[in-house]
Image (cartoon, rainbow, N blue to C red):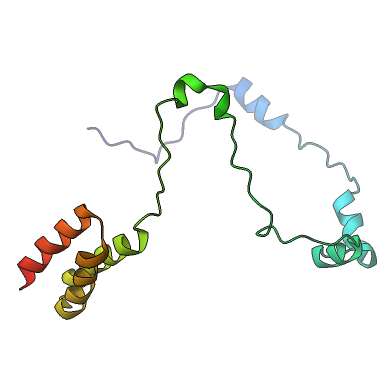
Amino acid sequence: MESEDWSQQPELSADELNVVADYEEPAVVETESELLKEEQDDDSYLSIEELMREDGAEQEDPDAIPMNLNVGLDEFPDLMSDVNAVDVDSGGEIAHQLDLAKAYIEMNDIDGAIKLLENVAQHGTTEMKQEAGALLDQLK
């Protein structure tokens, strides 16, 4: 790869020099900004909290409003006919204990893991009981 010599300046033709010499800076036009006007009128500024207080309407807690989860799947009975309802939270606490027991094992807290696994072995689903039993066998 050849190195470039930047110490030599390129030669410019007379036409190129005239273009550079004829260049004029664009004129700066002074305009008033609406933003600057708004900043000057500080007494008209209201915070969101003040606006909410001035509304006067009783604000309902958004967490208290029941959620409408109907997304219109009833319009597609051919897609939904063979789908059974599943409670995704069933056994959630026990599944959480099984995950926590695995974390305890990774942290070498064997006693804590054994207590959780024994609870899972008593109260979990069949699959959870099998997994907890296998882990207990490894730990003992």
